[in-house]
Image (cartoon, rainbow, N blue to C red; front, top):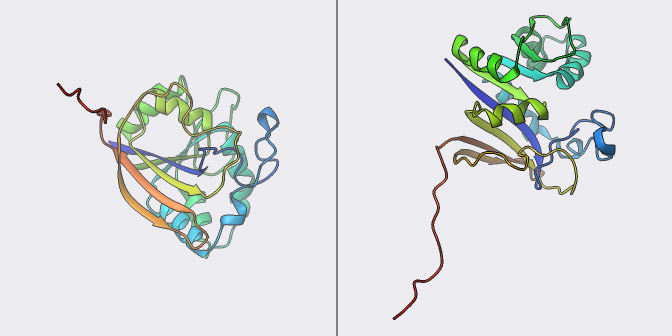
Length: 208
């Protein structure tokens, strides 16, 4: 049985769309692509390297897979630990339009994504991580398949764009297990499942 982790670069208002570049995802006329880039420093890269070191399998949607597959196979520097890890690890892709995958050790999921991922969790050991892939992440959330979030929260508000949690997401509670800032103000937070939310009230009882 494996643990499914979502790693996401997000703004303060929860936007995760196109952190890496202007042409990464222009859906709905999104014009803020590349917003993550000014916040990348040595601390950030150390965190990302650690994220991948603690990952055994990569789960991606088609759009994120295409972005990764266009870049990482060309990085052949054996001293680049992220490239070495990504190029070697098993990769699972949820896509209705792809018929084949060229990137080494990539596997196309068949059938409904939620069912296929649930089966993967049963069959595999270790950690399955998904990154980017907002549509896939929403499917995982809707079917209660996420076990942990690793969020890199940037000190930035965009006011528009695809968000990590969409309207109508099922209520759930999480425990903060790690929190660490970078030198430029990105906050790395890890959250693990903690069941369902509990509720209370700050209203004062009526006095007789």
